Amino acid sequence: MLTWARILALGVAALGVAVFWLLGLPLPFLLGPLGACLLAALAGLNMQDAGRLGIGMRAILGVAVGASITPELLGQLPAMALSLALVPLFVGLIGTIGYVFFRRYCGYDPATAYYCAMPGGFQDMVLFGQEAGANVRTLALVHATRLAVIVALAPFLITGLWGVPLSNAPGEPAADMALDQIALMIFAGLAGWGIAKRIGLFGASILGPLILAGILSMSGLLTTRPPAEAIIAAQFFIGLGIGAQYVGVTWPELRRDVLAGAKFMTVLAVMTLIFAEGVALAGLAPSLEAFLAFAPGGQAEMVVLTLVAGADLAFVITHHLARIMLVILGAPLVAHLMRDHSDSDK
Image (cartoon, rainbow, N blue to C red; front, side):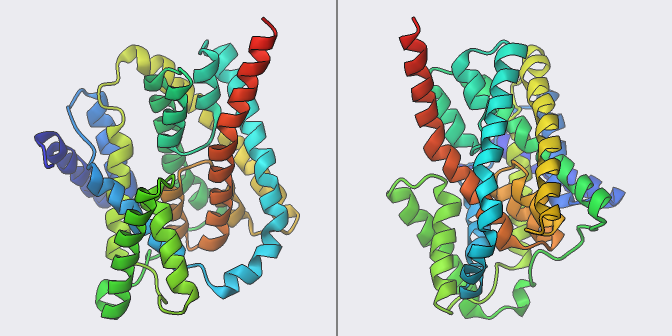
C-alpha cells in the first residue's frame, strides 16, 4: 500500500541519490538513499520502508547469486573448504566478544546481549530475541546499525585498501539481454520467493529465488545475471530500508543502542580485516574476496557490494550462506543451553 510515509521515504531517498551523484560520492544508488533516509529519520520525519516491494527487491539479488551457481562453481567447492572451516570460528569469536560487550559494558539483559551479538539476519535475530524475552527495540536498532555501518564503511575500505573504484557495471543493460533470459529471471524470482515463503524457508525472498535460479543455471537454461537496471533498483530500496529503520528513534536510544551498535561494528571491522588477511596470506583467496566473504553484513547488502567491486560473487556468498545458516540453526540451540546452565546454577 502506497502511503504518504512511503512516498516521503521515496522522495528523500531520491534526493539522496541526486546529492551523492552530484558530489561524485561512491555507490550513489545505495549510500545516497541510506544516508538521506537515516538523516531524515533522525530529524523526526515520519517515513516507512517500501514494504513488500522492498522485500521483493531482494529476489533480484537472489537470482543474481543463483545465476552464478554453475558446474564450474561446484568443482571449486573443495578449494573453499579451508576458508569455510574458519566461518564457525569467526562466528564464535564475534558472539563471545559481542555478548561480553553488550552484557558487561552496555548493561543489556542476557537475552538482549546474546542476540545483539549474533551476526545473523536482521529479521531472524529480532524474531529469535523476541521469543527469548529480549528487548526487541534494542535488537532492531543494534542490527540496523550493524548493517548501516558495514554498508557505509565497506566501500571506503574497498577503495582505500584495494584501490577498487566501485565503478563496475553491476550487470548488462536490459536492452542487450535476450527476452527468454529476462523471462526466466522473472520466473525464478517470483516463483522461488513464493515457494520458499509457502514452505517457511528463512530469508525466503532471497534464498528461494537463489535456489530456483541456481537450478536453472545448473541446467544450462539461465546463462546471465539480472540486468544493471534491476541491480540498481535493488540498491535503492536496500539503502532506503536500512535508513528507514531509524524512524522514531529517541535521543536516549541513539546514545545507548545506536552508539553501542556502532562501537561493536568497529570491533567487527577489525576482526574482519584480520581474518581476511589471514585467509589471503594462507593463499585461500584474494584479500578482497576474503574481506567481502567475512564482512558481517546481510546477504543482500554483500551481494551488491560484491557485484560493484567486481569480486567473485560465488565465493563471497557461499561464505555468507554458511555464516547465516550456522547462526540460524545454532544460535537458538546455544541460547537454550545457556538458559539450562543458568537455571541449574540457581
